[in-house]
Length: 159
Image 1 (cartoon, one colour):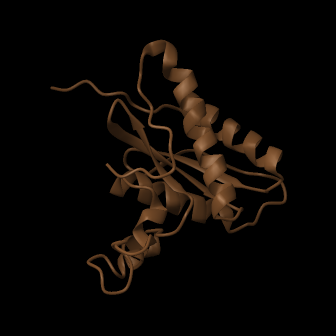
Image 2: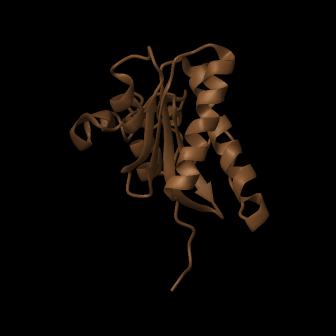
């Protein structure tokens, strides 16, 4: 049997807070969702004034990142993104009753080389969502550093 780290509410809230701080810093209204390894929300917050569509979109991005173990924007990255027309996963965004997101804003949460969840953001443009997502991952890295846990902090993640 293998021991693994499990994402809990404390870590999820810490990540959301960091993403929202970054969002306020760059002046964008975001919704942030942190999901567990099964793609179910642990924490979801929508800033005052953020779009009402944000919670579902952020959840979809986090779900996709956790479940497929890759940053969502990598599905459409030229030239070989698997969801691009003519490639093997074209149309995948219609999977899981339309819950599969193949655009920027979803990042797997990787601790000790294992995907333990996902973070999804909605509200900014791609660059803004990325800045907030990386801020969330960086916050988890800092929180878990005393425990000697390794957290992958980058935008392009594929496990």
